Image (cartoon, rainbow, N blue to C red; front, side, top):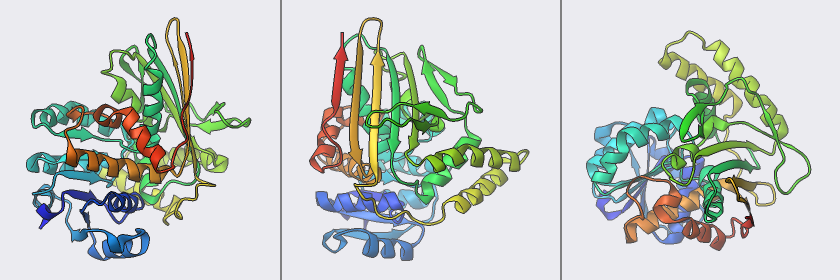
Length: 376
C-alpha cells in the first residue's frame, strides 16, 4: 500500500501537518496522511486542507510503535514528522525510518532532541545515505537562511539571532514549549561549547527591525541554531532569542512555566510529563484560525560579527506555519528527485541550500527579499 505513495506525513491531522499536506498537493506529490485516528485524519483532510479533492493521498491509522511505523513506512522514501514533543515521540519514528531507509525531517524546536539526533543517530543515517533533518520550520530555518547569507562574508564568527512571529502557538506547540522548558536545559554556543542559559533570567527586551517598540523575547529552549552551527568551522558563538508580538502572551509564559515547575516538583518523569501536558491543554486547547498574512507576520533578524567585519540580515515574512508547511513539502520534492547536499544529521540549509530554500519561500509569497547590510 505505502509503496504507491512516496511521502508519509506523520501527524497529518494537526495544524502543521495539514499545511504540509496542502503544499504537497501543490507540488503534485502523492502522500500518506498518517496518525492515531483515521476519523480525525479524514475530517482534517476534508475540512482543513485546501484543494484536497485534487490531491493523491490516502489516510492510514497507525499506532505509535516502531513495528507499526516500520510497516507503514516500508516502500516510502520520505517521512515528514510533525508529532511532538519530539523528545518523547520521536525515537520510534527515527528508528522506523532507519529500518525502512526513509529520509527523515521534522518541525521540532526542541534543542535536547536535536542534540540526541546528532549524537545517537547522525552517523547511522549518514552510513545509510539518508538525511536526518530536524527543525525544518520557520522559527529555525528562515533565521538560518538569514545567518547563512551573513556568513557569505568571510571573517564572521558570532551569530546573534532574533526570531519573531505574530499569532499564537498551536496546541502541539504549546505542549512542546511547556514540556521542553520544564524538563530540558537550554544552551547557547560560546567558543564552540554549549553553555546553559540561566533558567531564571526572565524576559529580554529587544530592539527588532521594523518597529520602534521594544519586543519581549525568551531563549525559547535554546532553539536549533546552536546545534546546527556547532560543527561549522566558521562559527564559534551563537545566541538565539525569540518570541511573539503578543506582549500579554509573552508576559504570561514565564509565569506559567514557573508555576508548572513548582507544581510538578519531585514528580517522576512520567507523572511530570502528564501534569505538564494537562497544564498546556489548559493554556491552549483549540486550534488557532488559519493564518492571515495581515496579522501573522514574521521577522528573522541576524547580526553577525567578527574581529574586523559585521553583517546584518533581516527577512520579513508572514504566516510562519505556512512557511513551515512549504519548507517540509519542498524538502520532500527535492529528496524525491535528487540526493541532498549532505546526508546524516543536517539542517535544512545544509541539506538543500539556503538560496534554494529562500527562493522557494519567495516564490510562494511568504517572505520579502532579505535586507542584507555588510560592514567590512
